[in-house]
Image (cartoon, rainbow, N blue to C red):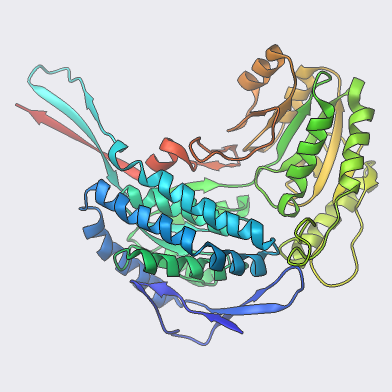
Length: 474
């Protein structure tokens, strides 16, 4: 059986304890690997190694750091089959999807490498005639990167690449559900020849994670995860006033106007809700449908949701794969049952399947209300609740009546409707006539409890910098 060791200061290290973290294939429930759990002392040593390496890394011209990142992008692409094979086993994704994720990770690495000559400061006019104000952009130092289970390879480089190009070094904690792909990335780091200590990757329990995140040399913690995890990170940040960057929960609303292309909207929404079994931060989580087309649209959703079949994607890639674990499945099923008890109508799905694997069927609920748990809380699974509305103002009010504000969707052919929602939606993103896809040249940032800071694009890269104002009298 596969056994992975942690990667720190440029090499795979021998375990300091007997702790092993079991990795389970969620499609079969079989244990497919073990990884060594880092001790607090090992996490502290990794931070010290990263801090030492950062002194030299930050002094390299950014163009030279870019050369390393381009080499890493090449290595990720070359290693994509191995990374994809590991990711497919630990996540339940198809090999093709998992391999493509590794290729996309190489692409976002190359994108951030190209910021090398574009990390710009400012010259600011002074009120004094013989004085210049110069604002510099500088690296923060050591960044702790906490990676989720759902897209662990892409999110790894989504955080690491901009941190590195800005002159930081990193200590990465992969999800304990999906760590083996991270250690395949470590092999790509070795292949690319990055200086020792610039990228460190350690699997760990919560106690060791606290030792990592509260280390005084950690200047920033970046997380993609739940609101609860975000609150924990904010507690960690308080220890040394580290900078947080948090992408947290989402409850993406989709507003369907009467003039929308209903067939396209239904296909798009179902694809969004069933990709990786709905385990996406920006997947459609609630649907608001104009009353004149409500029944017709629900029928379309039911047709497409009913056609989705679940199963082991290693055998049939076209199937919808599993949830991450049984706790997630039981939580989702409980939400569905409570929604039905509260008056929702089960159109399709909603039943726990028999047999191995953490599968859950594509589930459609109609006759939902704004005050229901299924509308207010993130499911992170293949559950689609539908609410009827009369006017666009009413739909906008319900879409905004929420704790989350990560992404949002509108289907309409009326530009006035599009502008009303674009100017009024309380979310970091709006997608018009399509579902979310997080273009890496944009800026993926949440409002409300969906996060602080953000990822992607120029603004995502600048998250990993701090400023220094130089006031020059002459």
